[in-house]
Image (cartoon, rainbow, N blue to C red; front, side, top):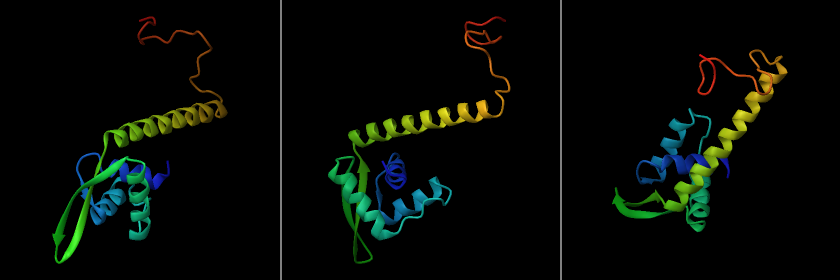
Length: 122
């Protein structure tokens, strides 16, 4: 899943949104790192709809123009959850590698018991 598709799905988790609303929400969610252009957005929306991850919620006329609102499907929510877990696992792997590279400060030998943790000594 592309970063853009990921953020579009995240933008649709709480409510249906129209194109410009999605652009604004993705900008906010990504702290400005993902800047969608309208042409790119509609290509992503078409692919997500074809994959049945999103669907048309409704159409409304606004200032003489038609606004299409999209919503996340159950399949879209599942795909988003899977992608979020995949990304989190990747981040955990990277963090372990960086910690190991830094000399493993605080690293316990295999099988060591850490005090205060569930199953560990007090």
